[in-house]
Image (cartoon, rainbow, N blue to C red; front, side, top):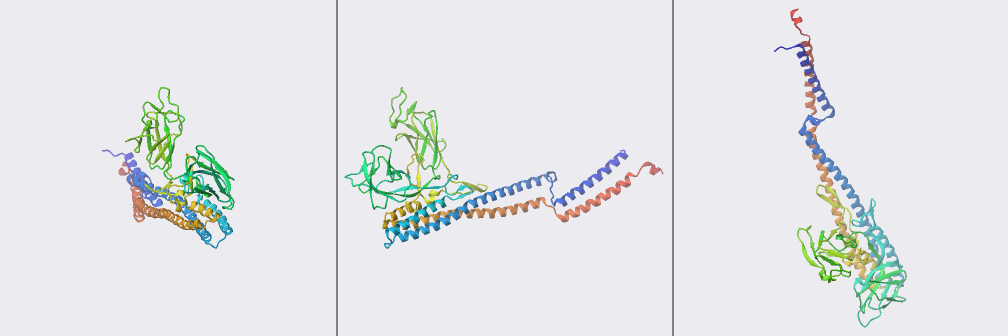
Length: 509
């Protein structure tokens, strides 16, 4: 094989270029302190580094989420601490008002301070973090509570009072003349007496006859009574201060109708734990009771409204029959179809529970609730969104409903009811203990956040150590490798210089 001069020159240049590239590569590693500066340096190692770096980035995002959650929970915890101090002051006042040595005027002064403390308590429960309500459940864009009026009903159903509107500077007592028998509201006018000055003077009033809700004006207060409810011989009531819960509650749900009747606006009533599908089974059609049926069909009986419901997204269905006008009973409550007209076979209603919890993800598959449902902590009065009927929130014992306890305490003081004040004093202690217990739940969430931060810190250190082992250089080895590469480059230059100067003429000469 003939070796030409051009081949010699090319090979020499290639050797010099290769040696220089090696020096540059080692120099780049020495400057960056990294063994992998581009994927081609080590494809598998680069892929591992990218995966590990992605894990560190996700930890950073989780840490941001944790800081947000800590802001929510720390603020809520501070509010609860102040709330507890306010309740302690209320207990002190209740203790003063329960003693027999206190005069009527002194009890009135105590009640006045308690009214101020109640407003302060409502303000504290309306606390927010970054503009988001802490205790309104999922309704974070509005305050959890508002000032209102409630009714303490004795010897009758709480449902006797449908709702109350207006404002009163002092509790209003209502008593009924002793009837010969139980009376049903709405059948005939029912006279009563009411007092706006703690029972010193009394005025006459009348619940009118009629259906639905029947309104009565008591000064600046409108009391709506529910027709059909019973008033017994010893029924009485007091209209007093209250806190109206306006946030969302656990188990509240929205209902939707999928069919041809545009006049239906269904409302879900009850507490629902999972979605429920409802399917109309009548064939060919059924009219909602109380409406005009299609001309070709007779007016159906209420029990002719047949339907099925599913708790597992339609995998299985349970047959049922409507038992009351315009209501479909399902597990957890019922659906008010919300209108009139025809329902056709196959048409459906869907109930979707509203999740009151707002959760922040703090690690993969692990989240923490940052908000709270105020009605679970403080109780109060809740107005049904469908009917407007109001009453103490469900799921909380009356003696733990701090707002109702305070409202009854104020009423007892203003009515000079010493026994009532003593009972409220004991209930205040129970309500405060309940709030303390709920505060412990928030403390548990805070501990979870701290544990998660610690775990993330350790995971980050371990991951960074692994990246360093894969990517970083051994300084001593790189220094030796650099010296070796420089020596090789000098040797290549020296050899190339000698070889390139050789020719046939040099040999002949």
